[in-house]
Length: 110
Length: 114
Image (cartoon, rainbow over all chains, first blue to last red; front, side, top):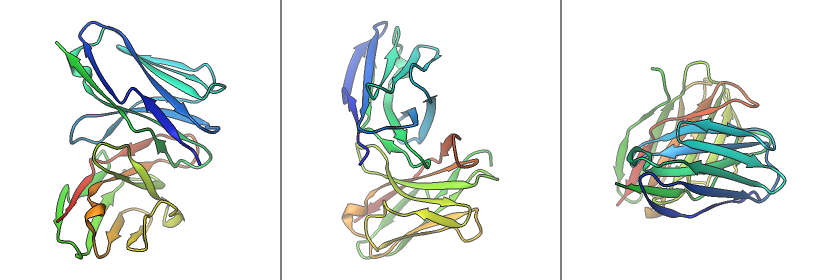
């Protein structure tokens, strides 16, 4: 059974600081996704990572994938308030069914 | 519309009542998924359709849950004899095709069973 773990579950950080969210998964996966979810809203796709060593960046967010370690990271640079949200990683193998982590609730403090 | 549309957005049901949740995927999208998201948790897979064929229903928690997509477009998730533990947000997602294609999520239906 594919399991996905994220840490930390809760993260409170000051504006301007850097931090990293970690996502570990238990078995081989061929795709890893990062999503953002605002309260009461749906999931917004941030990144899709397909291969070992893949790195993608969008604004203050950068995601990377190490398939050998079964680890992905989401790095936040110089956080700003509007990045406050819950971030999920999700993995899939074979068909497109996604297995999600429990999420990291990020709060950026002014 | 441009995105995945779900209705109703909110549903309050009395325990034991049957409910039906609707999903309109993006036009032309072949694959359709239902997920259940309990409060404070990540979404959990329920079932998957490719066109009208239900290819995977391994995530449906009990035989009270039933999903259909009879014409390969709109899908309905039906829950019979609702229980309090069914309270959650039900998310629908669609993708253009099988393989390495991105899934787009609807805003969900928040079901509260009282």
